[in-house]
Amino acid sequence: MRLAGRVVIEEFDCVALRDNPLGDPARRQIPVYLPPGYDRSGRRYPVIYWLHGFTGTGLGAANFNPWVPSLPELMDRVILEGAPPAILVMADGWTRYGGSQYLNSSATGRYEDAVTELVAYIDTYYRTMASRNHRGIDGKSSGGYGALVLAMRHPQLFGAVAAHSGDMYFEACYKVDFWRAVDTLRKHGGLAGFLQAFQAAPKKPEEMVRAMVSLVAMAMAYSPNPASPHGFDLPVDVETGEVNEVVWARWLQWDPVHLVERHAEALRSLRLIYFECGSRDQYNLHHGARILHRKLERLGIRHEYLEFDDDHTQINYRYVESLRRLCNVLSA
Image (tube, rainbow, N blue to C red):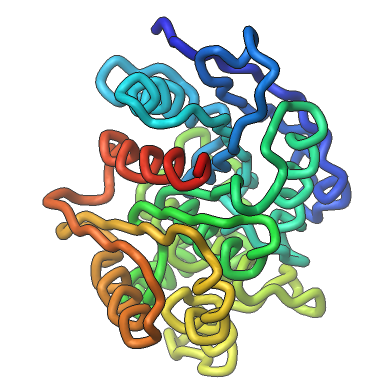
């Protein structure tokens, strides 16, 4: 792979993650894509922050795959096709259980703070246009979720947001799998046995990953509880399968389709809101995207929603849609 731009791997020692309860590394390798011409000019550039999906890493977003284009390759493409150049920073929200949803949680660590700290770091060491009008956030799946939520909660940092197949409408994307996840936990003797078996497994079986994605890791993000034996509360009883409505309500407070009303003014201030989803998404995320689209319409918030004929996997080819739009609006 030969890029027109180049990628620098930053060794980012994140203060926010030094005390994380899982003991995951605070020092993260962060790929930074520098556009063609960066080294030859003294100009400043807008910045796009990319958030990877669940089980991903920042380094993974930059990896070369002959069949699946990487983020640096896609940035090259949109710039060579005429989009204004921008820096792309591939953040890292990985945890030993797969991901953080880019939220601050007493069960996983301060990953929302980690992103905001990374923004300050990049503005210090790179020639950025260091204002929210020239700074955007983007991502896919759990990263799409993180992009939308961080844009709502930090409009002083981000002036534009894009998301591909982001987690939303939790009833459809998580809750439908609760009982299958409960069966998996019971197979390992409950939550403690499941966590131990997950850590020990040299290859994570699909049913374990599914239980982690739909229930356990999400509970770490959405319903942390330092007083609980494991540091978080499950929204469903492992013995009976009964939903705990109090805990479930805590989850729903973090659902983008419910957050939108509370953060309407922040959303109105954004220069771009772009999101899209495949019409055959295996996790039912197209239903949530449609709901979000309708709610934004009702609130009179300017946005762009696209639905395409595909599912959730290997949709990197779609990322040019958000990257092109972000490069254009952030350079204006």
